[in-house]
Length: 449
Image (cartoon, rainbow, N blue to C red; front, side, top):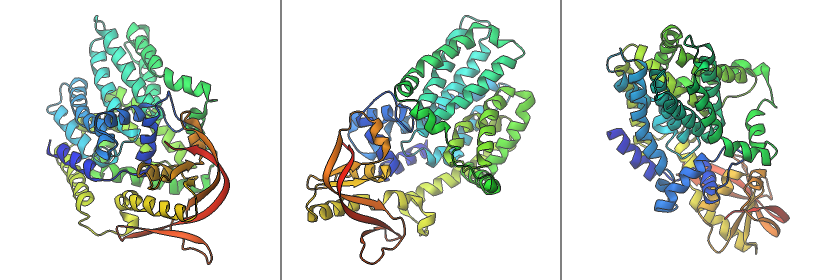
């Protein structure tokens, strides 16, 4: 409970990060789907801002509530899957909160936040569904499994991998589950919940599915060792090493004692390993598999209390670091400073530059930069024009062609060349990022509102 209240303090203190601002714009224009992800993150953000306004804590409100409730679901899932294991529910809660993924990674309101919550709900409903086989409650529990899996897919498409594993388990289960009504009812519930994402993709030439499923367009098998090393090292760090070892032990023992969990893990695990043979796997892609790993780690891992304590200590330290910056880290080791600092000042300075040039529009092809600038609302009636193709998939944003606009381009850490117009932004005195400025004519894009 103390960790949860500390999480609220951190969430209320940290400014918005650019990707959160992007999803916040989604929440202002709800629709059945978006190019990058389905609609769930936009709905959650809309609920929070409808209740309390456009503030970081309000945007993160549903995620904070979900981070508390998912402990209840993982507790009862563990108790039902492993009734013979003493204290397994408590161990599951502790291990879930020991992950840097759930402790820090889902503090921002991103699609991973509702994803992990609905996966925990699915595991809880699945445990009860298997227990209720042959009873009148069978179809009701399988409906819960299908509904929560559908909501997970509506949060992030990677949840489909859990559905593939679940289908494999149902088809191969010794009790011939595929002959019973429950799993089929659950499948229909999943399909029904996923209709918004499917319908949106149908009407937009499958843009979302193609974007997420077409990530192998650039393939570098010669760098497989690098990508695989990054995947393993990154996940061990995010899970914390001791808990990661418990995950491995738990999955190994689950192959005989609880094969369902292994079925849920294997399709996603194989997909990510194969992807890492030719391209980088983003750290958060793998998070969809972690709630299932927590269950087997709590049931089969040795000394789960000590492992959880080591992870929770890391999470608590990171909270203190986020709040106080107690350890003065270099900028490349301090993502909180890099992602949250200086945006309000940058928006104000850009509005001055725009007015000095006699224009009232700032344009950029960086969707994250456009989003965070719009969140901080440049002064003097200056508008933000997004030229990235992502914005074309938000129907409510008006398309505009501006006679003149101040175009801003992120130059990262490159110093300006002689004669170039640049703006330098210091983040908490630790990092300098450069933005190239140019007055352009005939800029086309979507006006953010």
